[in-house]
Length: 144
Image 1 (spheres, rainbow, N blue to C red):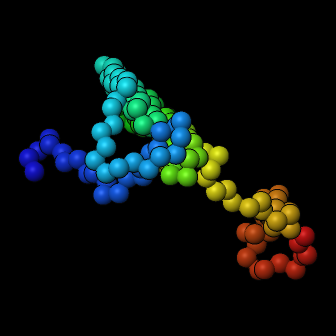
Image 2: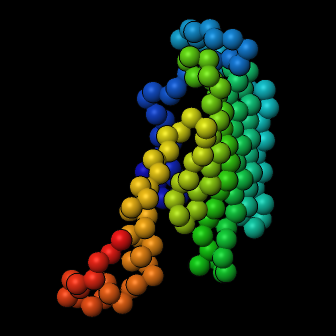
């Protein structure tokens, strides 16, 4: 490919979205109309886009550069998308993507179990006593 050109990568399998009103299997090749669509890019590099389709899929995102000069700037994007699962459940994801990675949130996403109280106490004790971790001898004190 020539310099300055790019190639779009299209996933082979995309979850099919079902209209919000009812669960009806979609037939292959069904035409989906875009109801609304916006795309704006500002001179400072910030941007925003959105779209909504007649099958209930919608998405929006806005992004900007954070930080000092252009060499030190870090991109950040915030957005959300929604669609209806094949079982008729409406799903919505909100996200932020920045120097800490992609951070999605959604009521249907799994969450880790709580940290057991014994482990939490040990972590708190270690944080409060860093000098014993640096002693290097394994210590003889009893930790909670």
